[in-house]
Amino acid sequence: MNNEPKKLFVGNLPFSTSEEDLQKLFEQSGSVSSVSMPLDRETGRKRGFAFVEMETQAQAEQAVKALNGMTIDGRQIAVNASQPRDRSSKRW
Figure 1 (tube, one colour):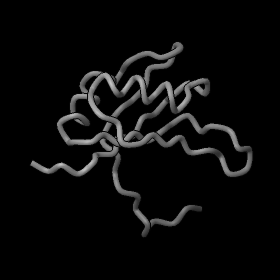
Figure 2: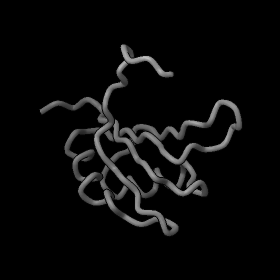
Figure 3: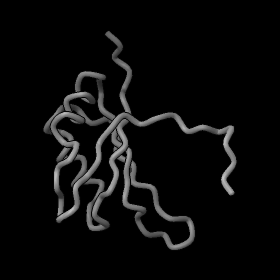
Figure 4: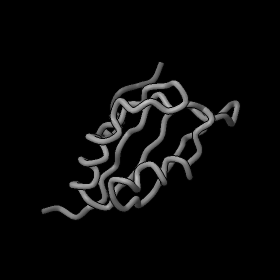
C-alpha cells in the first residue's frame, strides 16, 4: 500500500471557515499533513475552497466518505481527491 500523503479538494466552504477548523474536522478521519486555503490575489480574501493533505490514502478515502456533502454554516461542502492541475490549458 502506498503511504504517500494524499491531497483532497474541499469546495463550497463558508468564508468564515479557518484552516484550524478544517484541521480539526479532518482529524476525525486520520492524521492531517497540511491544510491550505488559497486567497484571492487581488482582494486577499478566502476563495471558498481548500486543500487538505492526509497521511495515507486510506485516511483520505475515509475523509471523503465521512465529510463529502456535510453541511457547515448552511453550506454543503464537497470533498474529493484533488486532481493535478493541467498546466497545458490556458486561462483566458
